[in-house]
Image (cartoon, rainbow, N blue to C red; front, side, top):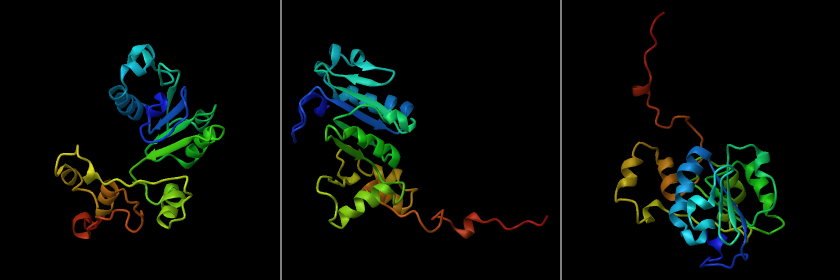
Length: 208
């Protein structure tokens, strides 16, 4: 929204109107139930085309139009790779970790504008391409300075009720809790089921 309206409080962005893209996991949940509702809450009607969210929102394909001519289009990881091609964009946001091929196709949309991208994610898929291409070089101090990484701890979220995280995550492994709480990449190795207990999960073989 800051990019689309030229109101970013922390950095200089291109002058609107801008062509922007937000990519979510899927359409029914990620776009329609989460992202769309979030934009509806955060976007003052005065920023939007027609002065209201309903007038500014196009359903198919999903696009949010701003009164200054900027727009944000919404795609999902479910869509074929060719749906992520097309014309240039000024910035692209990824909601959770994208497939590497989808990520690269979207990056091609930023070349002629020298645009920006960002991924907001919880690293639950193991040591993926994001880990090898970005996180590991960052840990070693070898990451290209044009890319920044920020780690957030769930305990720092002032809107979470005290103790709620521990109660909801109590059935997860320590590795999964660390990934969700601290944003740590976890190695999916060793036992397929790390909580496996022979005494609880094995039944004696019965004779035929």
